[in-house]
Length: 133
Image (cartoon, rainbow, N blue to C red; front, side):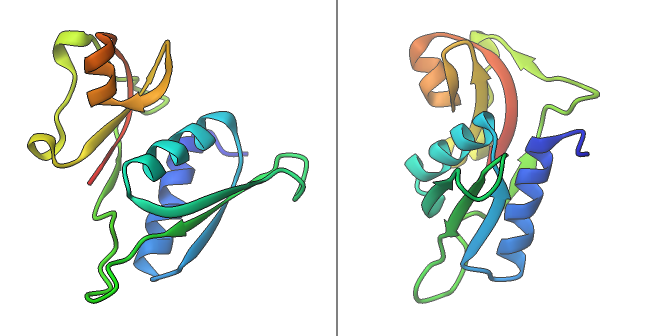
């Protein structure tokens, strides 16, 4: 049993990038699907597929994105911020900026999972899940 499924998700993606894998398969959950959609919308992953027929839980297959000429991954760093032992909540006036706007912070808000830029536009705060750049 895993006590922090989001950290497990991020670690699997991080390990797949370090091993230069093209595809990584992760056990599915609603919040992991939402994080995957945000990563795809912001251009950090090439594609994804939700496979609900694989098992009771289902799986997410993520095709990682690399630069064709330099073979560098699109995701340089994936950092977990809010942990089960210490939740990190921010209001609308304290939304984080990752590398002065070059990266994204993924938040879980009352309106769903989104980036800090979208939350700033909607004028809502939430729990900071991770930083991606």
